[in-house]
Image (cartoon, rainbow, N blue to C red; front, side):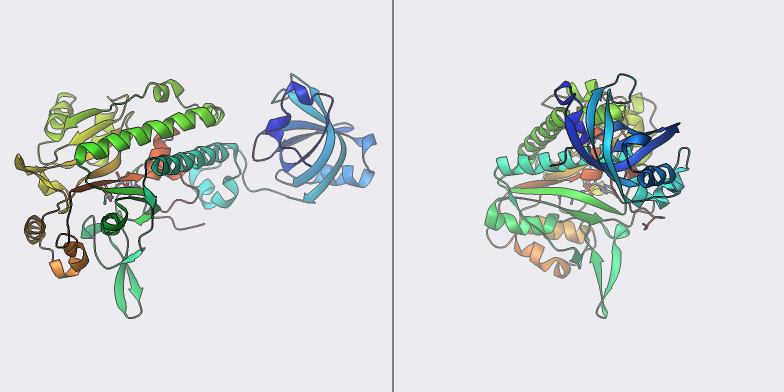
Length: 430
Ligand code: NSS
């Protein structure tokens, strides 16, 4: 059975015969030797091929082929401090499985070029590290919800109404009719709590975002949850438990990758529960004190979020937004109906909003009144309205942007590095 590179990089394998399968990461000919740095999904290791040890044809072919050629080889492991990962394999048998010539990606290619060639760039060590962190984030998220008694479920992607306002809806032709790509599965999750009480989903959401920022995609992965009998505070408690659980897992499983990306690990290690809760009103004061040009009643744009959260070194919940700047479904605060029982979670270090959530209106009259204020036709939302007619209960939920979360955890400069195939206003390929 073949080994993977990561497992042979230790003293126990010294002197042992191994079989490796991978791709040429770097190659150098020195007289009768070819030095190959081999990569697989786990790591890299230097392999030395001596001309006299293998058939002449194979040596010639190896000399000719370029980086990214795929190989299978057998050899013996040696300790070698000068090798990039501290060990070296003396090759005894080797075969080129799929040759590669003139691999288009080399050092110093532009960002645009790397995006056009994302299908090849995903092989880079940088993308490999990011994708592994992303994997662990998704895995830990599922762990959290399952352990907490949430049922996993799914809503449709073709929908007929807006959740988060009409301006970012993608219209799709649908057999002579018009439908939209979903902005959020929230309303469907709300229907499902009447059966399952606590539900979650991980699915794409679509936003026709016209802004070009470091944090907006047009298609993103959205983890959403909804729970019956929950109030705003109950939901925030689950969310902070979730965030801390995921960060813990990433620190356990992905230190190597975080280090490779030069992530400040200490910052992640210092994140503790409970997260600070700050009312919107106080946030505006805080922002003004720090020279951010914003007034009570303004929504936070990308620039304001960056300017504000640069001063944070842990996530902060912002609560009690004025109701005018959030969608109609949020429950007004009974103590002050001008503000709503909601929360956004802002990630520190300039990253900004990663979660939006809160308590939903559960009384029929209040919902109808809010819809009227927003100029919405209750018939378009008849099924959503129905939930308030048949055994309504207080409930709350949230949506976490998974790509934004990975963007922050991995410490990346732009959200497009956090997802294998980013979709933005200008990019739909590869
Ligand atoms: O618009 S949100 O703030 N809220 C909702 O969609 C609610 N319906 C969620 C819910 O309560 N079930 O989006 C939630 C999160 C937000 O905090 C971001 O982290 C992420 O979704 N989000 C995005 N990520 C990437 N790109 C774009 N364009 C984007 N828009 C929102």
